Structures are given as C-alpha cells and as structure tokens.
Image 1 (spheres, protein in one colour):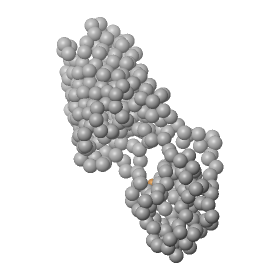
Image 2 (tube, protein in one colour):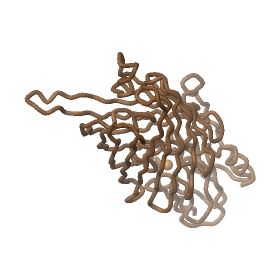
Image 3 (cartoon, protein in one colour):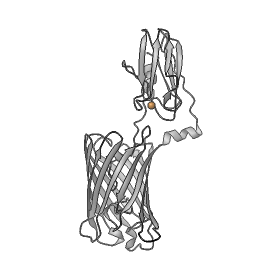
Image 4 (cartoon, helix red, strand yellow):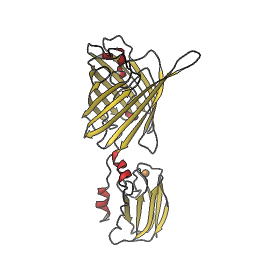
Length: 347
Ligand SMILES: [Cu+2]
C-alpha cells in the first residue's frame, strides 16, 4: 500500500459542485454558488398555450450562465426573452439580461444541513436597474425552507425603488425526487405576485437535475421572480454543470497514468471501469498479488471494498491498485454508483 497511498491522495477530486434543483424551488434564486472551475448552465423553458381555436404557444425561456470564481463567490448572467421589465421605459424590447455576483456569506455548500445565506448584487440591463437579493435557506433532513428579500431600484424599468419578498420550500421525497413551491411579490406595486410549483428529479448517474414546473413568472431574474402574469405557464428546468477541467482533454488528451504495483506485489489482474461497469466483474488472483483498476469513463468512480479499503475518486484515465495477501472473496462497489459491483477472488 506504500506506493498507492500518495497516488490515491493526489487523485482526490474536487467536489462535484453543481447547482441542484433538489435544494431550490423554481422562482427563488437560492443560495448556491458554483465551485471554482465549474460553469453552471441552467435552462428554464416555460410556455403558455392560448385558448381559442388555434391554441398558439408562447414560449418563455430563461438561460442562466454562472461560474464560481473563488471560494463562496460566483458571477453570472440571466437572459430571458419574454420579460415584463420592458413595460417601463424600455418597452421597445422584451429581452432581459441581468448580470449578477453571488457571495455565500454563511453556510456550507448547497445541500448541507443548516442555515445558508447568500447576497446577490445584480444589474438588470433592460430595466436599467440596480437590483439585489438576500437569500436565506435552512435545510434539515428532507426539507429546505427558503426566503428572499429583494431590492429593486427601477421595478419594470420605472422609477421608484421597491422591496420584494419571496418564500418557499423544497421537500425531498427520496434521493431522486422532490416537490417544491414558492411565492414572490413586490411591496407597494400593483402587479401580480409570482408563484411556482415544481417536481424536481435527479437524473441518476449524472450531475444533472430536472424539474417540471408550473408558474406565472415569465423570467427568472430578480425582477422576474417578483412579477406574475395572469396566465399559468407550464415548463421545465434543466441544470447542467460543466467542469472546465474536462474540456482540457479536448486539447490535451490525458495520458493514462499507470498505477505502480503496490510494493513487493505483481499485478495479477487488470479491471477496466467503462460505461458504469467494472468490465470484468469477477477476477481471480493469487495471494500476494495486486489488482489494478483503470477508469475509462469521463465520470469519476471509486473502488470501495466492503471490508474497508477504498480508493479516492478515480478520474478518467486514473487508477487504483490493491494488494491481497489473504485468500478469500473480496466484494466491492463504486460509492457514487452503488449499483456498480465487482468481486476479487484470492486463492
Ligand atoms: Cu461509479
């Protein structure tokens, strides 16, 4: 094990920082901040089907692109094409862009138990308005309660700064499914409150989350999350974390880093991890020999033995080796994907 330990430590992967809909309802900005090196792309698509003979569909898409730039600090932009912020002095356009920064002032990363507080200063280019949101959420077990206090300098592009408030919850039914709802409204402005309800799912074996949503809010900016339409919109949201490091492989394909055999042992068998499988799921070696695993997937995996020893997260082209001195049957699995299983038989 002497030679595998430093190797394993060197491969401890960065946490899979990702914006997850399991901890945020559709119309609240939440308190998440992407990890440095992760670009977060969220796509909200809502639509309205008009009544009448032609049932024409109006689409209300909002794109969010954000990146972690330091620990607990992110920057980003929100772009919606069917904004109401253009009702004011910017009435010649409905394309709304909001740029923002986000500082997680309190709390551990998203999804952790306890209180989280984020401060989001923003500028709305359509309304020409300096906006901001103080987001708070509290997670305990399957429940996350959320609150938001917003400052909007020029609501809908009109002069006269206003406050807006929002609140909501997410209830996780199990690891993969949650339900949520929220409401947000301006104080002292005669526009409808924004509301939403959603069913969120984690796409198994991926860092992506997906939500089916019902709402009356046309965009997902700070202003958009505070204004409702008279119509009910249906749609979905999809979160896509992009790990910048992975794209480096387009230009500098990683050379397989062969793991040395543990001291005094020879490699008795090789196992490739590919397509969420240990390709040779049962292998046999002699006592005193080692087994070497190599990950051919773009996703990180682990080799975690039921009798204790475990690899760190193994990135693409990375590896792990373990020496077996005692005859027996050693079962193992992948920690992030427990359905990936394998057996080493030592004779
Ligand atoms: Cu895995």
